Length: 470
Image 1 (cartoon, rainbow, N blue to C red):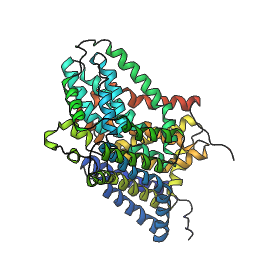
Image 2 (cartoon, rainbow, N blue to C red; image 1 turned 90 degrees about the vertical axis):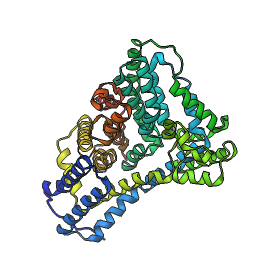
Image 3 (cartoon, rainbow, N blue to C red; image 1 turned 135 degrees about the horizontal axis):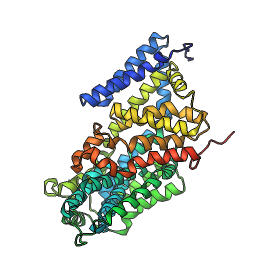
């Protein structure tokens, strides 16, 4: 079925659905605290009514939505597998063992640097910035209070580490979304992010190391809060070198660029084997961990008797945990499909980019668009999906590889959401760490230096991958 095209679609007609989306999400999510998914559906309905009034059929709208969802369905399936894998790695002991031995590296003498590095490690292993900040990050805030260290600096280091790991973890929902919407292999996307995230991490580490030299106090002993976490972990799990095999499988699969889903499933089944053999978990609990996520009760522990911070850290994973991310992705892509059936996206992006003549201008425009979208919608996932869907063809037309866009999306959305006080991420970090968002913002070095590096690389051409001419 061929779609009719409305000639000379005006700029106002093209931008109308976007304005509706921003207003609905801005008032609903930002002002009233409503869930984003129904509001996106409402905006999609309004965009659909506009398309029908312009002469497009209902079937053509559904066809366009189906086409767009089909293009990223493989990546959406990866999100479900990620939940499966996190649950299996938790009950199998892989992630808990890595966290346990990572905690042994703490040295209060270099508190800011250690907070950054260890939070980054935990975030990479768990794929969640919120989880790592709410567990290990909280422990570091307690250490900072005991050592009378500037709490804003330590909070900034925790936030930087949390989002470094979140950006570079194949378990992260935002990492999967950014690569999916731009149609980039997730491992290629992660590797390409090292141009900005890697450089930001070096800058952040140097800053925290230098700052830490002014606070060389304390006994050098591991804080009691961390010792308590380690003691419980050691009692709960049976450590064995074989528990590291699932991680090695994913690393080798990433380096050799093997298909993502088979690699993740293989690593997951090895972890489930470890859960049965080394952790003594029952078949029922093993299966349940992959569906609903791990909880300490699966290993015979009473949740109320376990340290709350450890419960926050370990209770995660499962395919059901990814359903919210999957739902919001489908809703956002449905809106984009409904809007694009009229050619509105093409008209809008053409107007916005018609004067762009350089890579620097394109990357800078992307950053501005993403910051505005994040500030208005207060939702990082929407702010990745919408600009990504709208701009990916522009990057291709300008001869740039889509992974340049996917990297810029993460630099300007994933890392900056927590720097805006009224977003869910900003409010969560402030409440969890006990430091106002604007107070830790200057010290969250990694979270804003990525955008600066993105502009530098765009201006110089360094780290900018061009599409090969056919």
